[in-house]
Image 1 (cartoon, helix red, strand yellow):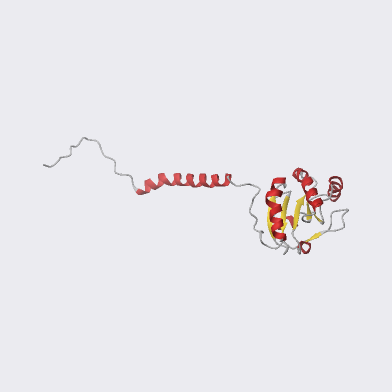
Image 2: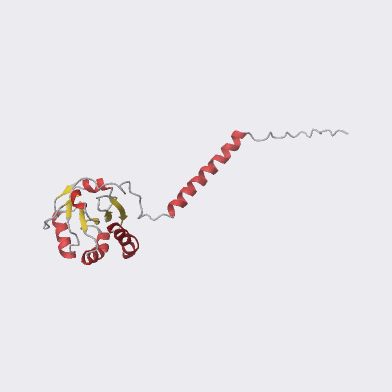
Length: 194
């Protein structure tokens, strides 16, 4: 027995083509990819921006001292011992927040702290260090900001850990907090000093 199809007068739509299916699915896939990318980005700490200079020698530079200081800062000064280089400015509000911790690090003598004074007026930088205290062993005046650009500085403050060979071992963007000091920087410095 054979079944017969009855013509009802209604047309039956052909199955969708592959091109049409792809056109519908492609925006969905793009949306999912963007959402995944953003979700991963939101889980990251914005202070931990990877630096292409990690593991590389500090850029070659030589800066004069900040007004009223006798020791400037040069790349040659950053070899032979583990040290910190702190990029700061008198006009930087966040630099004021971290300054007491830098003074404490200097008093404890755990590691030399060097200052890279970024785009500051000479008199303002000198006055700021005179009033707030000077935690720096050496302080270079980067008046035009070119040295900071070579270091990959995004803004102030930023702090770099430098190993004995004069290589950048770590970078902190923003002010150093007691938690960052105790949990990240101090253990790294102690490890590098061994």
